[in-house]
Length: 306
Length: 306
Image 1: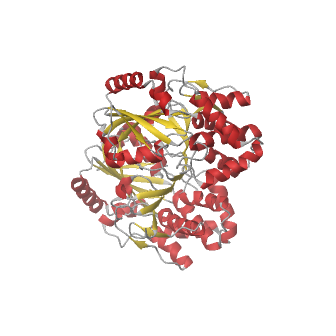
Image 2 (image 1 turned 135 degrees about the horizontal axis):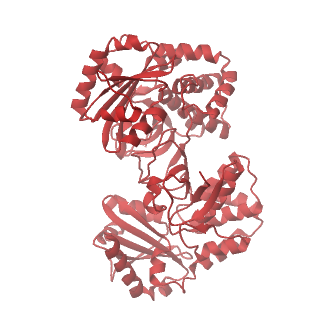
Image 3 (image 1 turned 60 degrees about the vertical axis):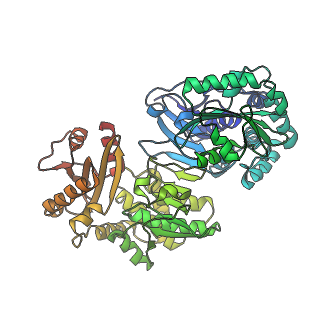
């Protein structure tokens, strides 16, 4: 059969890459022949973690063969997964998102919890199986939690994530706040990316009822700095909307220091954003105070109003 | 908000009723305000267990209100769940089936494992949370395992189910084989059921690709005895096919002693059974040696050939 492949979603974020690595160790411990891989480029935030630990990124793959055994971490929707996922054999999923557009023909392991981050569930799995959490593992877990919760400031962050992070901080033996802020800031250095790269860096295709949408997010330490590239970003978004037949594209530019977002919105259903947040788009953009979480503050609200 | 309701699938089998009761205790232990309920009549096998322990069946419900918080055990497909499930808030699923026709708008707890029975997963959850398994709990778990695995003879039975059952046998302090056979036999006394009741007793509606099908199963200690009612059963099945617009209805009459099944098949896609098992239906029926498990030996094979 060959190795079972483990991967997070397309346009991988830190949790997707690191949880795949954590799952690889977990499954090897249980005697499985597995390999962590990734479905896209490593972003600078994730690279900061890998460099900090002196470890390599998993290799990149584009598609899987029919019947390939796979483990999904940090996602379950097929639109966000590897090409040809429909014909793969999914043996296991570990995730913290809603379940949608997911099906199998056979029973499988599925572990989802409504926590801030997949790596928090990995922590629980390690504990349940009595797998020792080494310093490196702790830093991987902690980095993913800090990334997904924006240093515990996102509304997706739960008490359990905070509790787990505190345990991990002891094992990691680092200053969590200082390390976390450096990691997040490393991720906001996007100056060398093209507009096309910026809008696909952390982008998810979703169905909001019958509205075909993409919701992309970039983290920044300064919204005005990012808005200097607004017309360039609008061009890229307009092309994507046309080429992919989207009804809606939302780019959330999220200020990780102040915890707000500026959105750039295009597509024939841009009205959905106006209706959902009771705002008026001016030149395709609006400021959404306090909004930082796609999962908690964007997807459910848009879905409800679609 | 009111109580969170916990239930198994429609036409509940022993695992669906008992796992709901086990989950009720589990969630109460964690401080949740929950109530186990059921979506249909208690069959004689399940009643044997309830009588043995002197406990009441959960109350029956038909539908849930919009926004009702629910926990699903032993199923996830909406077609098998409570009426109006689409508008309920599913907070948790514990199951051992494939995932299909299931979606949520928010993250949730989802725990699936490819084990023989939901109650085996409940055992693991009790252990993980250090919830004491009392003698009654052990008998509930053991009964569900014996029921779903036909006393460990079904191909759905895993090594882990057997290991768990052996642990439970000690706590239950009963002779597992003797108790189990009595329980299974109690379930085969179907003489007072009408043909309509027989074909709905343990019946699941499924989509086999684009084939709308119902797969029903009755356990028996004697296939010839059951076949005395063949024409009566065929009439009921034909009515169901017409009334519900089904493409296929398969009734598996399963000999729990010898581990074989006789199927009665109607519907315009009856050819699917012939193709899948390389048999010829004679008078709508065929003998399938060694076939006892809908999940492992019927559903995937029919799906593959659909």
